Every structure is written in C-alpha cells, then in structure tokens.
Amino acid sequence: MSVERTTEKEVRAQPTMRSENVPPLKHGERLTREEFERRYEGMPHLKKAELIEEVVYMPSPVRIDFHGRPHAQIMAWLGAYWIATPGVDLADNSTVYLDANNEHQPDALLRIEPAQGGRSRIIDEGYVEGAPELIVEVAGTSADYDLHEKLEVYQRCGVQEYIVWQTQDGQLDWFQLVSEEYVAFTPNAEGVIESQVFPGLRLAVAALLAGDMTQVSSELRAGLQTTVHAVFVEQLAKTESGFSG
Image (cartoon, rainbow, N blue to C red; front, side):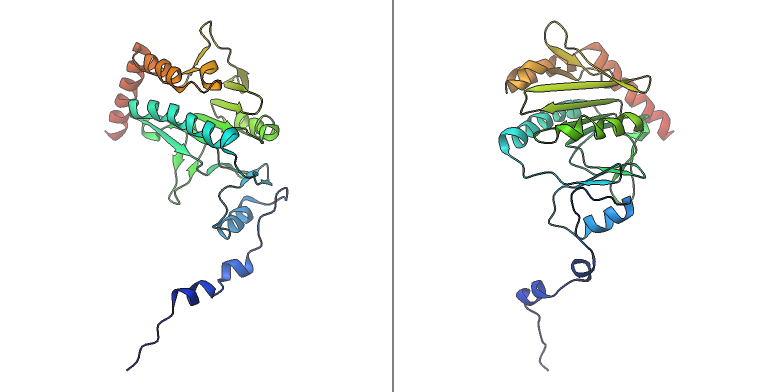
C-alpha cells in the first residue's frame, strides 16, 4: 500500500484560516483589546505592535545606533541588577496587560515577583498582567507617544518608575510616581540616579549617554554593595518565606 506524503513546499503553500480571515493590524486604527489580540496573533511575522488607549501603534524599522545598541545597553544594566537581586524579574519586549484599553510591549521592565509583594503577575497565557514596578522605553523615533500617551497610561496604571531614553536627542528622563503623578528625578552631584523602588539600582546617566558601559557597570556594582541593597534582598527573601508558609 502506498502512502502519500505532503512535501514541506506544499505545506507552506496551503493557506491557513488565520491568514485568510483575520485582517492585518494598521497603525493608527482604533480597536478593542480583544480585536487587537486577534489580529496580532494572525501576524506571526510582526515583531512589535502596541495598543495604547485603544489605538494601534506600530513602530518603524529599528536602527542599531538609535535603538538596537541602546536597548542592549539597558538590558545589560538591568540584567546585572536582576542577577544580583533574587525576587525580581526582568523582561525584554514582553506584552503587558495594563487595563482593558492598553496592551503594551515595553522595551524593558523590571518587576517584583508577586510572592515578594509585587503588583503584577504572569497569567496562564504567559503575559504580564498589572503594572510592573519599572518600565524603560528606548525612544529612537517614538518619543512623541512615549512621553505623552504612554506616560499617561503608565502613570494612571501605577507603574512606580518610568525611564525614557531619547536616543536621538541624547536625553534620559527617569520619573517616579509620587501621589499618583510622575516627578522627574534629578541626578546627584556625581551625575547618578538611584531607584527608590529597587535599592542599589544606580545609573550613571552621563556615562550611559556617552556609551561608557564600563562606568555604568562600575556605578551599578557600587550600588549592589550597599547596605540598602543587602537589606532589600533580605526583605524579599523574608516576604517569600512568609508567603510560602
């Protein structure tokens, strides 16, 4: 008895219900979150799209100098803190459900695990739901909405700290949520900002803008050796122990 086999070429040529029946996302159109998700899932080739206040945003192609490399620098900085701080979680370009009208995909986020008192969680589908404690956006060409529509959403939803690095303008803004409104941090005399949510997370701002990752790493290491960071790690461990028990 002969057995017919479908070749790989034939499989690729077969249309799918998803590609035929689901319309593509379009920048600027207004959608519900449910419809946005349906269309996004129907475009597996699409790397990034966001729903901000029910409006679809689709970023332009990524340049290495204004986005790719700065993004890597932010991830290197946050990654070193994450490794040294059990109880926190780091993510790169992960979908976040903030509320019924907003499904964002921030460039980077740092969150406290719910067992340690964090305000966000990972749902069964594998997405983050709720407000991460820290969000970073690398604004190569997206500063207009990163500093307006997104800022307002993050502020309203309770993201405790928000960093926007405007790479084309050579400017970095770090906001802290105070009485439900964002207030910009000012670097100290040494040009350093330290997180109030993640003790020991220090950023040498001028060094980062200049591409001096050696100095950025050195300043972070100094923060990781402080008493406040050690106390924070101890508190996270105690919270987890109490939660588990």
